[in-house]
Amino acid sequence: MALNTIVQAGDLRKTILPQLADANRNVRITPSLASEVASLCRCLGLNGSSNLRSLEHVVSDFVQGWKITVPRKTSQEWAECAYTFAHQLRGTDTSPSSRRGLELQMAFLVGVRAASETRSNHI
Image (cartoon, rainbow, N blue to C red; front, side, top):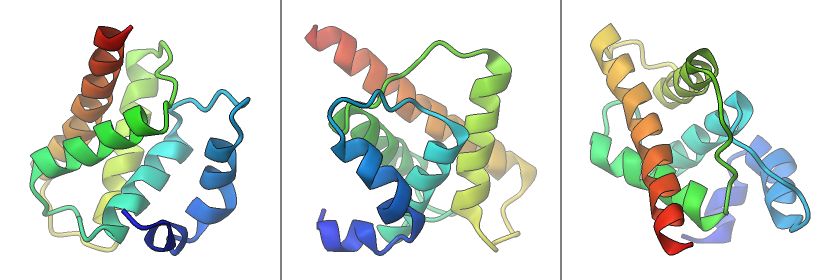
């Protein structure tokens, strides 16, 4: 994945990459970060109609590769992050059904969980 491609995603360059570059910073999954991961997916050519496994892998690779902290959250907080990811990923595309929106939310959560489990297995 080329850095030039990533920085073209707008706010990703201004807000997320500087946070990730700062090794002393404890970057956590938030709705804002979930939105930026969705923007990265769109930059990679993925959208609300993309294969769910592909989306899960991008989320997992992002969380694991950048060593994003996966904090304890309430169900409501996780739901907010997942909803934000799905909403941003769909963009102006209003065609996906409510079911598809839920599938996109689950893809985000499965990706985060996979990254978290992989990291735990390496410790």
